[in-house]
Image (cartoon, rainbow, N blue to C red; front, side, top):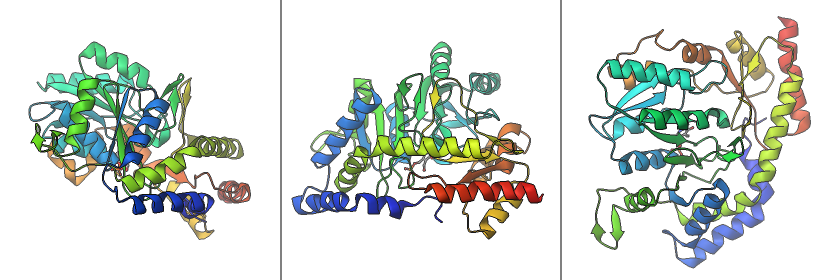
Amino acid sequence: MEFIDLKAQYRAYQAELEEAALKVLRSGRYILGPEVAALEKALAARVGVRYAVGVSSGTDALLLILTALGLGPGDAVIVPCFTFAATAEVVRRVGAQVVFADVDEKFMVLTPETVKIALSKAREQGLSVRALVAVGLFGAPSFLDELEVLAASEGLWLIEDACQSLGASLKGRAAGSFGKAAAVSFFPAKPLGAYGDAGMVFTSEEGLFEKIKALRVHGQTERYLHVYLGFNARLDTLQAALLLVKLKYFDQEIERRREIARRYREGLAGLPLRFQALPAGAESVYAQFVLCTKERDALRDFLAARGIPTAVYYPRPLHLQPAFSELGYRAGSFPAAEKLAQEILALPMHPFLKQEAQEFIIQTVRAFYDAG
Ligand SMILES: Cc1ncc(COP(=O)(O)O)c(C=O)c1O
């Protein structure tokens, strides 16, 4: 059994994917070919924003947003301490200070309360907090509307890290449409995955869009006019062409993910474990299906011994990572994130997970608790 079966997905769309790839190979238009613009247009419309910029990865999408906003030395940015490292890494990369905030234990993401605590501590320390990066962790776009209101009232820019949450929605609004700009990742295992690294920025602000578009090509606004110090951070034409094929099946795949999540919740009900809570109106895209249990490591071994792969996202919160040790946080700084790191476990989740395989996973988890 695969944790995420990318090969089954490839086989399902093989003919169309191969045809799309060959078309690019034969076209000779490998850099910013027409498929990039077509994907940008399709996804901007889907997300409900005015602009999209195809970039080389989700990390670069975040980096370009922070750079375009002019964040740098002397600025501080609030980020959750329970997320993938890239969310915080980019803040340091532009030279700004990372201010970690704890996540809510049940929802596993930032809430207005956890942000307010981090903000007031940072301000007490005299830091100039300019922005807030909110992550749709595991595909859940929770509280983004409230965080947008809070950010506006506190004079902060909200940046949405939607790297895991493209396809999700909150009260009818699509993930990727909140705040000044959003970053999406098309890393192969993401809900909409490419066949290599790829990402996208979404924004409705024209000035920001123009700047990000220039930044992805060495700060050029026209050929050989370098207005900004930029990057080489373009989305490959080949990846865009493959993503356009997968986009056709995206809604169907999201439905499958939601169905699988519903079956996990029902099949595992009554056991001493809990799932990621979702606020009213939040529709997760289930990039991961996670549960929390005190017996995490024993359960993981029990499942592995029976051929069921699992994953731990994330075993160590970012404030306890060596790369951020200079910030001076300690064990105990963020109790909810630290507890999640001990208790969280992701079960196999992908649109091609067969019902029998899922039934086996559910029965095996049940058997673990029956045996204990
Ligand atoms: C929350 C989060 N932010 C940022 C990233 C970075 O995306 P990428 O791997 O495309 O650079 C990822 C995924 O890897 C992620 O899960």
